[in-house]
Length: 113
Image 1 (cartoon, rainbow, N blue to C red):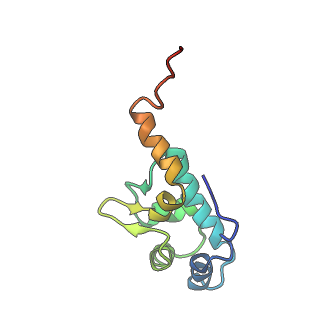
Image 2 (image 1 turned 90 degrees about the vertical axis):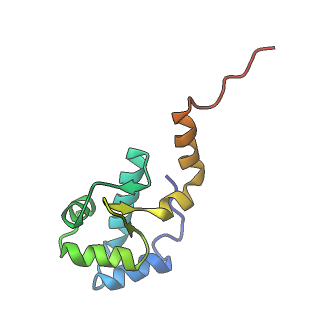
């Protein structure tokens, strides 16, 4: 999983901090979401709703505020069954591609000459 060096100061991260009332732990909530995706080899968090998202992030505040803030700052997108994490796939394209190739048996073995 790749986290860019400017992650803490990225406009999306700073927007999330502001939306959560200046909560400087906000970057950790995003890292927990990204780690969840990485560990499960998926770019979706499903099935999950507000209380699950709050528990995943270990957020102490209101679950609806967390969800709306993550949606507004574009870290997640709401789906019918849970959430999509499109930025994970964008920034970890090679990793996601490897997951897909692994489902097909992975990289073909080299033939000895």
